[in-house]
Image (cartoon, rainbow, N blue to C red; front, side, top):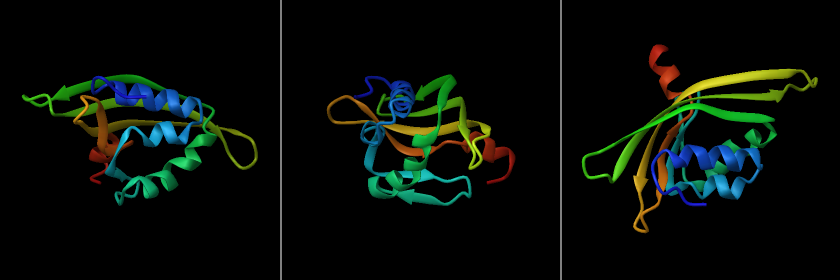
Length: 131
């Protein structure tokens, strides 16, 4: 799966997560991409991002409600903004609802596809919390 425009990065991520396909999820990231955690710390590289994303395979429903891309003037990079909702189950089997407002930087690759360079799933939430 390759994103042919910036916003497709999120749509393909959604599809891969729904299919519980970690390899398809990772294929949407540059090899040295940064993933920002809720704590504000970041992890770098596909091995570290795999560790962060693997627990999300337990999410039952995941959907972007809004995705908007803002490319640079040369169409080489773009900022993505979106909002998402998800449901999962806690250790007792009770449903948990999650949501966030994300911010990502995606970059056009040599083959014309787009990949995440920086992914902050709750980045727009963090602005309000000074993170």
